[in-house]
Length: 143
Image (cartoon, rainbow, N blue to C red; front, side, top):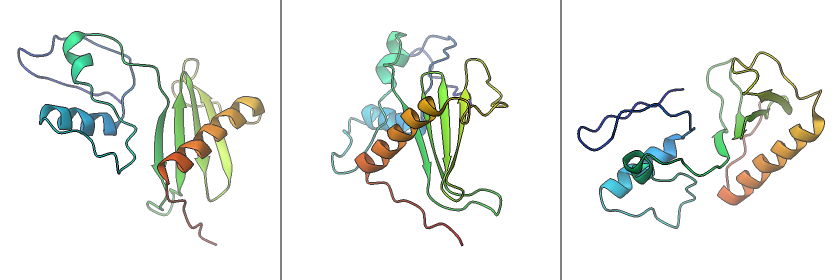
């Protein structure tokens, strides 16, 4: 999903394909206000301020989305990791995974989880480590 940032006379116009996450905006606003993130709350975002102003690349990192609740009837709890060109979606209700190579399949039309079990397991370990590191609440699955 695109992110558009405009700050007159502060940021040069350009297009970047570097992924960001909502927590990056939180940390950017904290830096702009002169505030530092609290060390008491897990926070895997980073401030984008220096990257926006200096036009340099962001560090390579894994991005995570954790939704431990039901949203509407058709959306069950899940966690996502975006790691390099790979994206893994773990569905807690069905205990199943969807694996996509975003470089080759940006539309996420071909689930590679069954074809690439080692890649699926590698990314599942990242999700498990993320949940442990952030003390993420895991969902209570509907029966």
